[in-house]
Amino acid sequence: MQILVNGEFEQIEPQSLESYLTDKSLLGRRIAVERNGDIVPRSQFTNVVIEDGDVLEIVHAIGGG
Image (cartoon, rainbow, N blue to C red; front, side, top):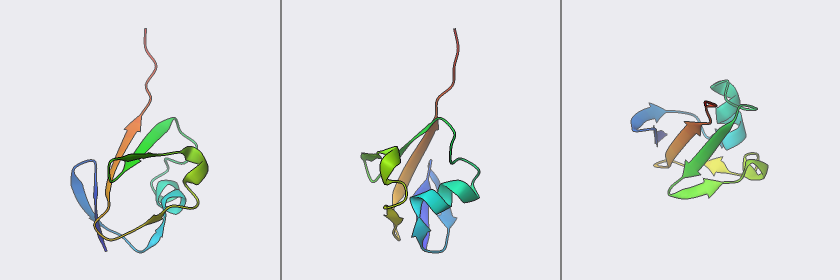
């Protein structure tokens, strides 16, 4: 299936958001995920199943001063 992640198309197998983030080495990092315009709470990463055509925006929190 095809999804759009941060403006780039990706072909992936059906999976949970948690599994996708794990595959990308992002799980456990300071990130925020938006799916189809809605923020996904970290507590829901396991329950959210990525679907064909989903649009994900993943942003990293970066410290600075």
